[in-house]
Image 1 (cartoon, rainbow, N blue to C red):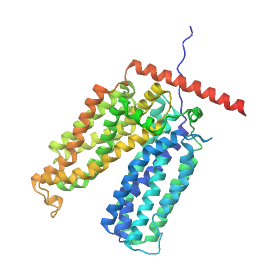
Image 2 (image 1 turned 90 degrees about the horizontal axis):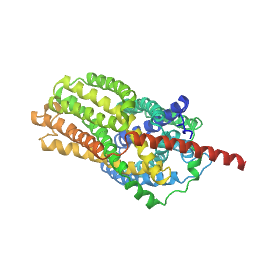
Image 3 (image 1 turned 120 degrees about the vertical axis):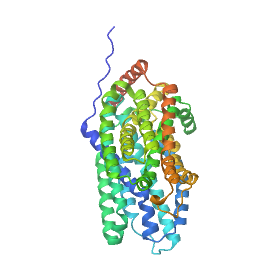
Image 4 (image 1 turned 135 degrees about the horizontal axis):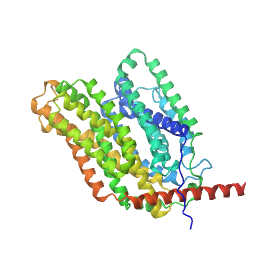
Length: 466
């Protein structure tokens, strides 16, 4: 009996580049809007009260938590001729660019607090609804385009590189907001126009350079509640959520504590940022080369141990520059792992779901993942100042003038929970994550063959219909 050959998956570099570019653009817009840009514009520039801004974010947060699984469910059931994801990216790009550009202009003739509150809330509501539709579609596209982790890894590498741009550009822009708005509000609006238009154009044209499997839109999906429950009954998904939640928390927490750490201990941030950049480069090599041999499960465990271990060095000895360099180097390795290995793990989880139920439900899984992980952002923002208070941090003093105990509290509030989460994740994944080893490799190979057969049958049917 002739043995079936596993199909060799290939993904064109142009497809990876366009997908990475589109993902970079929507992330850049979101980081500007939700990373403090819109709040600064309305509160500091237009004069909206901080209390109204806080209420706006609170009300928006309720919608922000619910729309992800709802859209994921809708996208899984979309039956457009373009596919299940591409229509949202292609046509949503035009709308999200328009909302982004208009968010920096006044919509109402009055500049009363009520009018500013209404515009800020509407801007957030419209932008995030469109962002969810586009970002979720882009997030799951690699799992539509390929099954094997080798092929998916090529896509993730390109997305990782573009992700550095999406991180750097908003950081620079947000640091310059006060100067830009103070010098010329009109010039600032023109800059936002250029950024929004360029992002919209790249997202729109990207959709002509990658495609989905056509057969997936013909599959009959579960009803909403059944789809949600089956996600939560998938043990591999629940274990995955431990690392997904932790990475979201840690990324937020580390950003919050940066300025406190540098100011408290007089650490030169250039040395630390340089070490982090080198750590990212080393991490890319580590997770792509040795990581391909270790496979996803072992790589994620090792990433947690390296990341957590180097942060522990900084927790204990962080008043010294050398320890800070070690910690930031490890953070770079962790950042690369979070951008490369964690999405591959998520892909395996959704492949396992298909093995169980025979359906591709990436949208629902991505939506539920966001629902679970978004509270991590709020927890990180809330816990840091609370923990500072435990160590006697005095808000009337500058960071550098705090007591030795309060400065220790800076390191503890900044690093203790991330370290604990990483070590906990390593233990949970090692003990309870089932997707690894030769048996899972054979299951992935069978899934790749099944996809190829389904797509071939679908294309033949479409040809016969025409």
